[in-house]
Image (tube, rainbow, N blue to C red; front, side, top):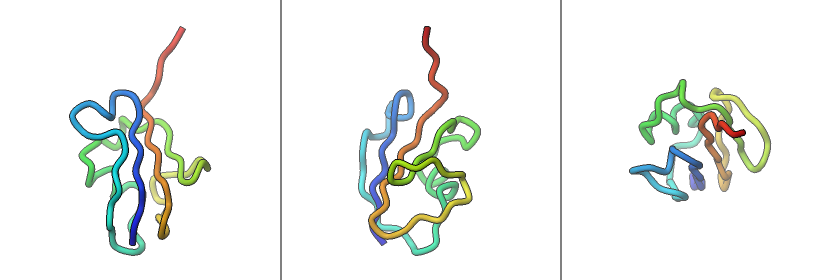
Length: 74
């Protein structure tokens, strides 16, 4: 199964901005987060195809997963 992953802000440091992955069917967002090596507690927002989801959401063929850390501003 093919998915596209986008990382934002500090998650890009020493990783990648965007990357395609071939993964097993039925894999969850949390498993992808672990595979990439991002501490699970560091992920503040998760989107699949522009829709907010949780860590236990299963990915489907062609999905785009976007991961965001907490973002401060002022």
